[in-house]
Length: 232
Image (cartoon, rainbow, N blue to C red; front, side):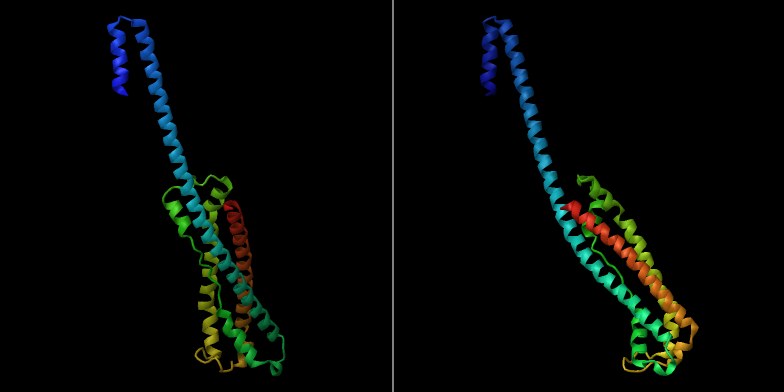
């Protein structure tokens, strides 16, 4: 093809047709420019297609992770609500006359006070996206916003969980070890535990903390729902 164009130019020059040669040269330049623009457009299209495919791959991974996170969070909401329920049951026992107290129930509910919830989400896809600096590959503005603030909201929830666990380790365990054999599920609890004012205060604190964590879990649940909706 190049030899063909070169031959045409040589013929025009040899025949002294300078005006036609100039027009031809301009036309050839225009064709070259058009060819370059077409090549650039094709390259841009290929890059856009690759970017779109990569975005779709990321969205699929994010949806998988956050679908798991929603199920895991709902499990922890139930667990935290159960902990608050055990506290309610114990507080009712505190109001009973000592002779009417069912020691089996007292023992059972007391043992379950250490059933703390711990939300452990799957953040692999999001962490990879953030660490690679490719968050802008996500075209949905709302989704980018929710993803960027997810770790901050999650960190607050994990801090609340940690504080409750530390409270149980430092305040609950020393008292229950005085009245309850932790190695035996059948051993009855010492009813004198009900006469310990510290224990009732601890139960109330655990109840309040568990319900507060539930409210934070529900905020996370709304965030997950928004993320999944934006992905869809």
